[in-house]
Image 1 (spheres, rainbow, N blue to C red):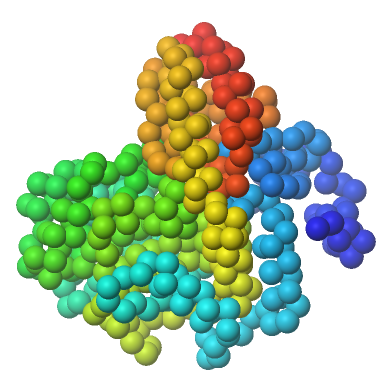
Image 2: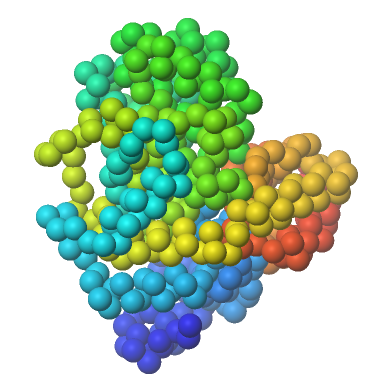
Length: 415
Ligand SMILES: *Cc1c(COP(=O)(O)O)cnc(C)c1O
């Protein structure tokens, strides 16, 4: 779809604005106008198509981060563009005093994909952290207040989700947070067993800890968590904000352990770039929030729900899950087979991968990759994360594999 530059050229900053041609200029204006929560942006991006984006200076990049595991269908995907455009031109927003067909259809579709043995219900949000806030409130509605979370976990930046987040550095400056949350070592079923008791409202876990550096849970861990929570009448909340919606080559990562959580949260990849999240409850947890107990103005908005439907449809129609498994394996194997002394380990699943380095030079590697036309993410000082669009091809993976040895050589000399 072409950029409607004639209509938007008169609006400053929109496509067609002749001034959007210099990264330097817009970075300076960014620094003056935006709160400094993210540091200095590395580039100003103006356009995307498929797995590529272009910056304000006209340079092209292979996007191996996908808007942080968000752009499932890449950039400017024809189905997503036409769906969102058609929905916005028909009905863009109604409050939650009214229902809309996309919202209902998306809830039904998500529940179908999970195929839980007990009936489920959905609460839509605009982000991952809000999906986890809803989960937190569901946990409180059990009448218990204790929540067991994992060290290293990331569940979001709002106060409830932050309380569950297991990174003291980002939590402590904002204390006191909602009380009752304890953290146990991730992946340790015995530690979980020791922490959960009959006072526990919920256990919250990610199948793979994304922000902690793409750390997969050991086999059997989620199944143990399911058994432990069931025994104590506690809820099992699975946070698939990053791992869900096909990212690992399955619709949801937790299904590899053949469990059904009580509560499941998703967001990032669901809207393909349009903000939407969801909190799904199953069995008794589906009905713990009643009239007046929770709400949202934008959540489940027709445009974002339509985007979610388009994303799910394209994943299924184009058999993207098989592609994610195939290209993900190719990429992971390819990095390992380079046999480069700087690469220690490749971990993750599908197209959520990280490779670890022999020295804490991931930021330097990411910066060199950017100069060479690749967007990757230094998720930890010694780990580089890849979370490309689910449409990434083998050839595109090979572009990166071809460039990686030189990038690794360069950081090797920096040690
Ligand atoms: C990104 C993320 C969140 C927070 O999502 P936002 O949309 O940034 O609020 C929560 N949980 C996990 C596992 C995430 O990766």
